[in-house]
Amino acid sequence: MRLELNNPKNMQFRTFFNRFNPWIGLVASLCLVIPSLYDILDEPLLLTSDHLILAAGVFFMILFLKQIFDRIINFDEME
Image 1 (cartoon, rainbow, N blue to C red):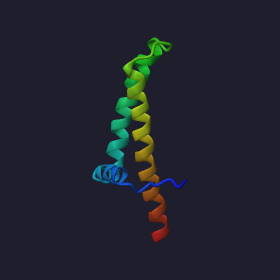
Image 2: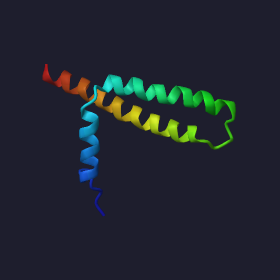
Image 3: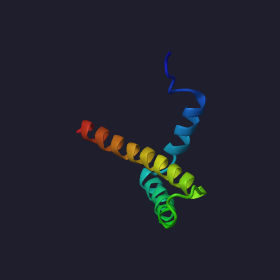
């Protein structure tokens, strides 16, 4: 079985994120992660919507950090 990474949904998702500056996306994802962590620490064993917000924020943070590091690596190869 082969994993297809370039399906139409994934490509639409990538073009949507390529419009943003990755630094702005990183700050926005941190704005999601930090308040949700604060709320989770009040009651860590109670499953709330803050856990979903935290998961989404971490997911977007990883995507934007990947874009930032890819740009850094590509810039070093150009010189």
